[in-house]
Amino acid sequence: MSDRFRVVPASYVFLLRSGGSGDEVLLQLRQHTGYMDDHWAAAAAGHVERGETAYDAAHREAREEIGVDGLELEFLTSMQRTQHAEPIDERIDFFFSARTWNGEPRIVEPAKCAALEWWPLSALPDPVVPHERVVLDGLGTGLPSYTTFGF
Image (cartoon, rainbow, N blue to C red):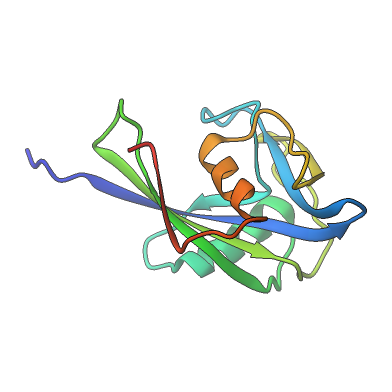
């Protein structure tokens, strides 16, 4: 048995728009996924599939989860993260934002998403998936290109 760990890549998309009290972000309320259910999370996110770039995964997840395409993605940060309970399973997450897209965001997978709502970055709901909250909090102050979580 090898001591090497497996790195699982994922892409996240935060749709942003200007609102009355500053920028707003579109978040989904997770349900029945087995991970962070009843937490608010990026409107679109998921694993990068074999042979797919993180950018391609971000576009695919936006189509599959909220029915939008043509996103003009801006790279925000990469995050290496782990859970102390499962150090063999480490993650590398790629976070993107988009202010331009085609289509009206909507819930495409109602079995996994209980709600889809715009929230001011200055007044996010509770709870938000913890590692995603780190990125959302950094949107107003600037993010380094590389971050870590759980180490």
